[in-house]
Image (cartoon, rainbow, N blue to C red):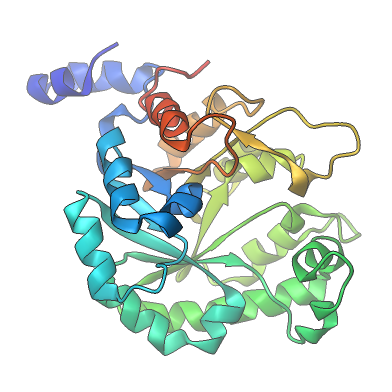
Length: 304
């Protein structure tokens, strides 16, 4: 295995070709290409924001994607990121929040220096429809989103993306499993989003783990739509339990679950994904230890 330091020192086309052919598929992007979704350390951030960011940086991550800023101004968040040696290149927002505060979100994103603003959860034209649903609105959306709902979301994304683009930002959408529920006639929400969003301004952040949990093939989707994806979430899952719904799957350290990432990484390399972002939502061991395992996996050591 050619180390990143050796590769950079060698600087030869031969070394580069050998590296790209090895299992270390993202080694050439070990700095700028690999990121961490900070939702992974949400509990720690709430307790010690600055200290947690420094812990993330000490593991080796240099790029992070936020999921909330814990009441901090853009200036304070940027200061904390810089002190930890981190580049916050992207952030997640629900569609409901984006629609409520589009201009404020854009201003915050620009001051922080974001490249991407990602919608991490869809909505519906009439939110009251799911407001009092048993199990909550999020659970109801997993089972109740219609084709018209997804078309409405696509329309909102097209409008938002134009506003983001005008301010130098890229807008995208992050999936879960609800997008792959059969809506009849061989159609699902993800297909509608691919068809109805403007490919010139709306990019997609594929959560490979959730796609696999939903029973779809992430590598095949990436290769079928090579220009639509800029970002990947790299998430592994424990084996499904009897009666467990796709959206209830439990994540684990990369390489210890059941998701086959080798074809995903090969597809990502082929289509030129910009960032591969680690996300682990549940932990059986301390988060710092788990994220060290995840980071090493992303260096190529755990690919099978």
